[in-house]
Length: 94
Image (tube, rainbow, N blue to C red):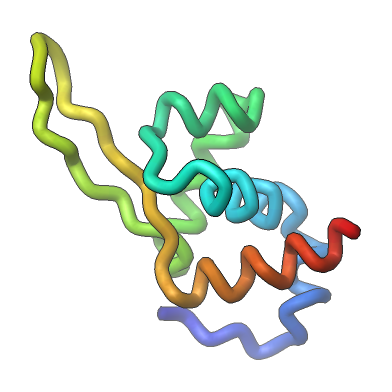
């Protein structure tokens, strides 16, 4: 968990892509990486935001066993810090 030294609302205003990502993951938890990027309608910058959120400890990505041929999906869930920021982001949206 990475503590944020500035006000959370200001942090989310500066990182609107992160705020949107956290809200979408909250609504669809757990969600695969591919499905999340489709929901965000962003496959380019969405991946960068996803990696940043994982690095800062807002989300976790775990492999799910594949029942068919192909690579196993990585399922995304929120951490406690991510859930807290998602509720703040949702209240700012209104």
